[in-house]
Amino acid sequence: MYAKFTDEQLSDCSARMKKDWNARAAEDAKWFINTVSRNQSEAEFFESGRREINEWWLPDFRDTLQGRELSELKVFEFGCGIGRMSVHLAEHFGELWAADVSGQMVAQGRERFAHLPNLHWVEIDGIELTNIPDGYFDLIFSLYVFQHVPSKEAVATAIASAYRKLKPGGFLKVHTNGLVLPDYDAVAKDTWQGTTFSEHEVRQLVVALGGQLIGLFGGTTPYCWATIKKPALLATVEFGEPAIIAAGWAEDLSVAEIPVSGDQATLALLVTGLNQATADCNSVRVWLAGQPCLPRYVGIVRQHHVAFVQDQIQLPLAQLTYLELSIPAGLAAGTVNVALTVTAQPFPAEVAVRLIDGSAKRPKIVTARNAVDFGTDLYAQGEKSRLHLHVYGLDETADAGNVRVLLDELELVPDFAGFVMEDGNWQVHAALPAMAEPGNYELKLSFKSVESEAVPVLLR
Image 1 (cartoon, rainbow, N blue to C red):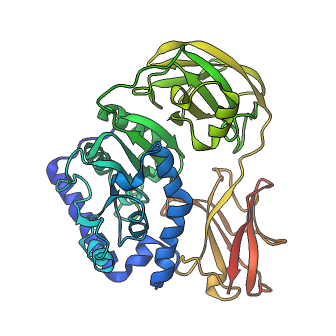
Image 2 (spheres, rainbow, N blue to C red):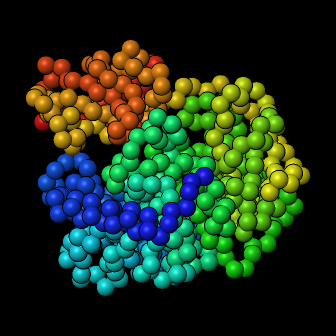
Image 3 (tube, one colour):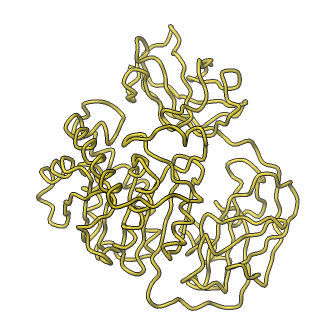
């Protein structure tokens, strides 16, 4: 998979990251943490962290932690910066360690929030975590950090080091860049444009660690999210007779027909008889029409399905294992059989599901930035009226002939649409028209006549 670094090589990588991120902290810490605009105010910077915590991460952590009381948990934030999210998480968790490779970042965060008794600031080496106690934390997370680490060996060592710091039964949530593009992989990596660490590499690493891979989403994108559980000392028993007792759409189990393609092409299964201490996204295979598929989630029933289970399934939630997977490309619409194997052993049950024709995958605008300093401040006229859109949902066929930018009802022809090797993402570049005026607009992207959802933009 990748060669193991020597201690000297890991030390050199750590020193390189520390030097570069200390320099960035001294130049403009807020910009390098939250790259939306230069010279952000304290209020807008920390408000962005509060919004992300409340809208995304706190609900995700509650779901992952399976009903545990947050105020009783010890949590480690791997790559905290100056505390954009740390200060808000400290309101909920009993003990939060905010850790960063940059001593400058840690010093700035500690100076701002020294008054919070449960928020502990610590400088780390960024890879081996030698000054952090083993087996201490209930939850460790790393958000938007490993995308900046320059080598696969350092990413793997850092994830393995974090795993050692978990208590049995604890969870590790990490983000890596999951792109699998040989040309991009060949581009030299540094401490800003870091390495990739693919879904396959994550899966292999979790097996080597002896962990349970509970969830793995966005595997082939720059945002590959893995949730890893450290098995508890006492194994969970199997519940009931093995059976697939429900199959449906991953967004709503009451919907029995699954699109065969597009953004909604996701299947969910409710299963009894799995050992919840060992079953995970690596040990379980879902067979669709005889084709093996790796699930993207194996664990407790996810929150948005609880009401359905309570209404329709006559079993306690604790006796059910929930599986979720994306429909693989190439399957035709029609009725297909679904079966399972667990650690290569056939699961003695199967069900039929109905696949229906789907749509093309919708593009998505991730960020809309200007072409001058790549901030999110956009102007109707001048240099900052050139759009640089970071997008999902394009492929190698994308070009100026099949991509359009829609500003309200106005259609713009881009001068570039494709993958940018230096940045490691799909982009669309377009100039706003000369008649554009300041105001609020809706911005959309169209790829092969399929439109994205609108995002609001303000032209100044």
